[in-house]
Image (cartoon, rainbow, N blue to C red; front, side, top):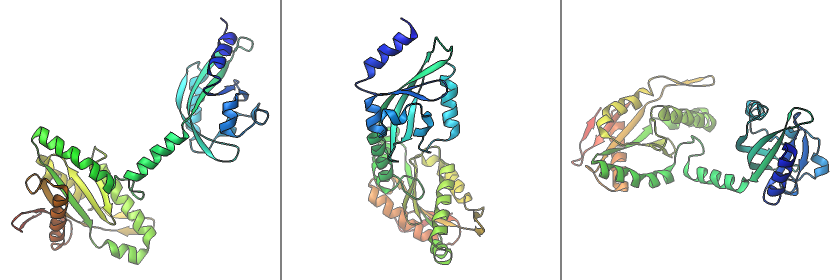
Length: 298
């Protein structure tokens, strides 16, 4: 079977279930099926002989498309997700497989793009992400903390280890908001989130609890002192925000599972109380909660 015959059979087999686009070596669209027209909102007459980049949404970089083109012009299949823009300017996502076929007449490749509309799935994924991550910092939020807590307990029980709950508050953050406005305050919190994330290999151990409060889970307290000093050291260097330079300090309260409690709310409450005690010492410091009402100042 020739390449032309193979391409024809493949198109017929896929026609009913998928969006089909055929592209020549110059990148011009030479064929689209009805499924493609329904999603893209272009008629076949409007789209034929147009360059494929007419569908670009602006979401992907030029380098992204150049790598695709480099792959398929070497005769290799490419598969991935592409964000495109319909005629009515709406965004849609397609799971895309591009298969190169040798054009026997011209000695060059032409390409069959097989597309699956995954817009609803992408939206669902985005909404799920937004539901469990803080919009400002991108860190996991309080909902995610509630979900993760049980996994920390299971791991600690299985490995017979202990974990620490850290309640962190930025000292005098209100002064930044009041003096420089919420835009500067928001940018400052983003930078704090970035610094915290930079010293943890796992993405689900630093949470934005709300406002200028962060929760950190240290899943093995044998490294607690080292981790605490790593966290405090993040606030030695200033924060540069445009023309502004800020020096900031934090107060951190620590509770230990299961020494202080096996209940999440109780551990959080104890860590919060220890954090308020650490504030009395001013500057960067932390305090471990003690059941007798005392504390270990660091």
